[in-house]
Image (tube, rainbow, N blue to C red; front, top):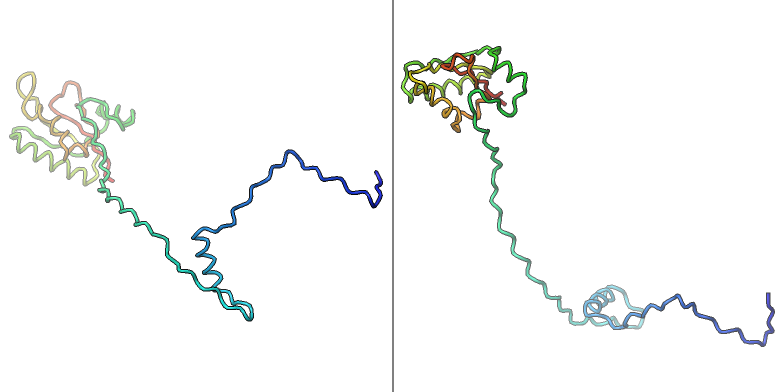
Length: 197
């Protein structure tokens, strides 16, 4: 340790070159700061013998008009996607392989049967519509529709129209799968109905 005499002046302090000076804030107040200070100072009791500071003319800052509310969006209900087109003998999506194989092999016995032999197309369609609605309402899983073979290679009118009827918006949500119960029996169609929820 170095000893100094009392009369020697202390060496000047060195400033660290790595420290930077922070510039001082301006001493003037903004208009908002002045308003806030005047409001605060008015709430404080002045010292004895001093008069309270007068309140400056406080002009409230201009308030911007709130933006107009966005136009209400139309609530669009979520509509489920329509089921895929149903084909007789085609494996549908959403049916497990075991159930499809049992239905296709004729191992799922129909609980109800509807015979459309000898009816006009209009009567047959209305009978089919009522029959499927009642079966679905009663939670029946498997039904059979007998259309008859019809004459000619294409079959009768009811046999040709049945796949189109099953894909109508009223009936398609009720039916999960459709097959002929036997390859040689194209005059009947076995339907697996969807479970009612």
